[in-house]
Image (cartoon, rainbow over all chains, first blue to last red; front, side, top):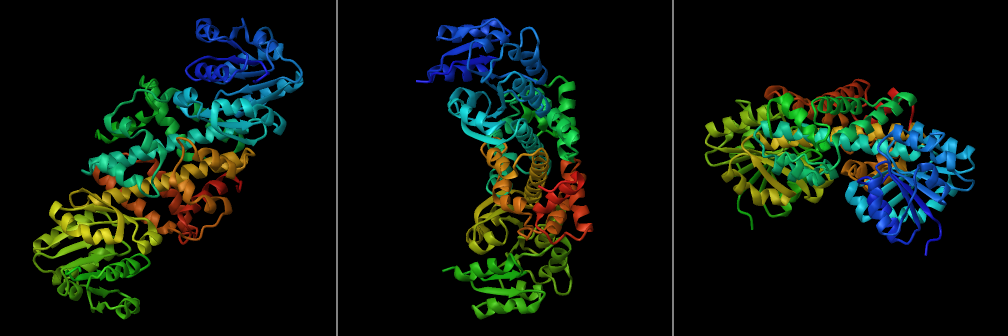
Length: 296
Length: 296
């Protein structure tokens, strides 16, 4: 039976089911969400609720956050009045599983160390399905000791849990993941529109391309979205645009040349400006279709 | 026991083993190669040799060509003196398995029809290993009747044989395959250099990225090439550059927007200009490394 009390802040489409999995695994749980109503389901299932991130921190041994973006993480951790760090204790482990800028992850880690606590960045891939089923891929940055202590908890939440390096390394890996997914969606879109406008059936094209060196998971998992123009998310385009912003900012800081990432980011920007931010990221196809005057 | 005599022109790194597989499957074989010495191995194994493409055509029921580029195909088929069409017979089936421009494939098909013969474009993916082992993916354009007649032969050469549409459709699909592979290599390269310059181990990055939506065959098959900078081909960068030239020309003819294809084509052009055309296409990594001042 797990003995450490776990705090969980951010009970959205990802965080809610993740917290539920920890509760079911037997961890005593203290939760908090900005929209307090979202705490109810977990409280009914046995969790305690706390009034602020600071109070969660003061009531748990290990704290997990799952928030939308870098500014949210900065506020939840660093707010001098209500923030996690203000309530942090020596020896506490803080695990941020949001997808944010590696630089912000390092700032949180530094603040945690000053408070005598330890922070890990541990963003995930695998979406809401992975969150519900506990099959996420978890990319961890931080110290070896912190990783070892977090491992049993993270094993409840994910299937692949990999320690990639020092603080920020998890976020860097997540940014790389988002580059690869976005650029692959774009490449598939270019291929589909070229083939279709040339008279080749897109469904058969995907079939033949899946068998070779061109095979990829995007084409497999999003096949129906592309072919039926069903852009129900899945993963929202606006979130992917945010993530490529992180990738580009990181590349700029480090001096890394990422030309196809930059182009695809611009396409996501155009879709978002046109009001399509709520669509699935496979809607990148629309940019190619519209610029080519041809729907597949 | 197969009864149709097969002609085979172009006995290079791909065509040689493919012709050998047909011979082993029992097809009577007539071969020709520009460098005549390359015919010897097949002749020793039981094939007949002919002095020109025209003579091959006059001695076979089904003719297969496997040549480097569009101009080679034009010369071998359309040369009025020594070409295939000059020797073609009514009812003959001509299968070009080279990777060339869809427009040239359609021109060959038209010339074949005027001679009373039938032509298919049937480019492949799977490389020299697939050619030797008979596991190629074969993308076929042309008539239904032509496809049906070719199928038993193509099943000897490949594992996945798919009819994609009218003449040129096979070449269009091949161009799409090459777009997807090249852009994926580029995306993997951007991710690897970004991660590595940020201090993340590239090997662990590939491990974690392989598990999710970012997973792809390029990362799996070329993993060692990337990590060890082993750019022994594999598939030569100069050939991939040729193939993206076909993709871009086709996109221009049809009016299709393919921005990441265009960028990656420019990178391949830069590598070729620098004398790297003989390297494996995974050497795209070098462009990103050099522009980022960082080797992974």
